[in-house]
Image (cartoon, rainbow, N blue to C red; front, side):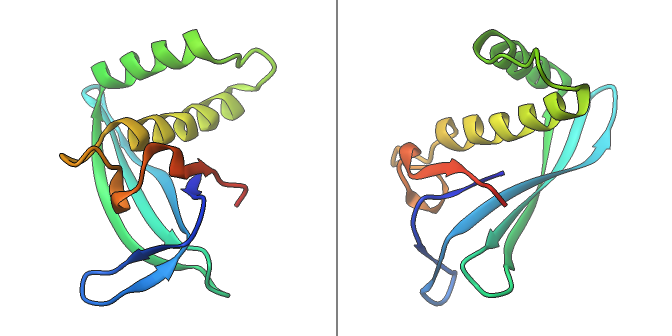
Amino acid sequence: MIQTKFPVIYGDRDERQGIIMLEVRPLEMTKEGNKYLVIDWDISKEVPEVWKSKEIFYTSEKINEVNTYLEENHDFSEMTKCERDWEKVKLALMLDTQTNLLESGKTIYRLNPGDWEFSEV
């Protein structure tokens, strides 16, 4: 999916440090939209650890809007349907992370949009 380019400090009551990878798993698909589970992993540990997880809901309208944007800006022609669908989830996750900013103008983990990269994990 996507991850931080460098170790970040995270934690509610302590200063844990690690590279955070965000993973999206589909949970439920309805006519109204899709529910996903977003999992924040610390992948810098010998055995990756889940730090946080959150269920999110994307309306069908939002999914169609993101799909149109991705289709206009990426070439999926050489991919199978499954490859294309997973690539779109990954690209949408990056797009959402880099543009759905906090009031400070930072992304989650108080990073800049360019501090994220696609993960090979």
